[in-house]
Amino acid sequence: MATENKKKPNPTDVHVGSRIRLRRNMLGMSQEKLGETLGITFQQVQKYEKGTNRVGASRLQAIADTLGVPVSFMFEDAPGTSTTPTGGLAESGANNFPLEFCTSTEGLQLNRAFARIQDPKVRRKIIELVKALAAESGE
Image (cartoon, rainbow, N blue to C red):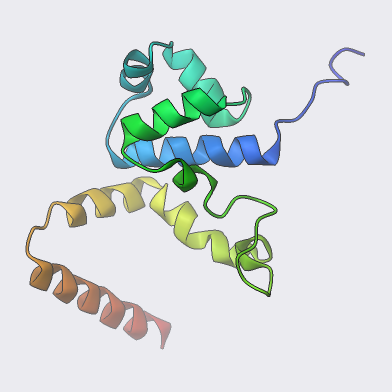
C-alpha cells in the first residue's frame, strides 16, 4: 500500500527543474559541476531537475546566479500561468514545441553553434536561410 501513496511531483517543481536542466545544458555544464558550485551532490541536482525534490528559495536564487539567469527564467511558461487572454502556452501542446526543440540534442547543438557566431549580419542571414528552407518544406 505504501507504493500506492507515492506522490507525483508538483507540476511547477517539474517545470522549474526542466528550466534548470535547459539552462545548464545550454551552458554545457554538467550536473556534477553545478552541484560542486552549489555545494551539493549531482544526485541532488538530478532530483531538482526531475522535480522530485522542491528547490527552496535561497537555493533557487543560487542556481539562477550560477546559471546566469534571473529567478523569473525558472518560471517562464510554468503550468497554470497565463500571460495572454487566451490562456497562454498552457492551452496547446503544439505551442510547447519551441521549448521541446531547444532542449533536444539538435536544438542545443544549433543554439550553441549559433551563439558562437559573433557577426550580427551573419546571424540574420542564417535566420533568413532557415526561414526560407522552412517555407520550401511547407509547400
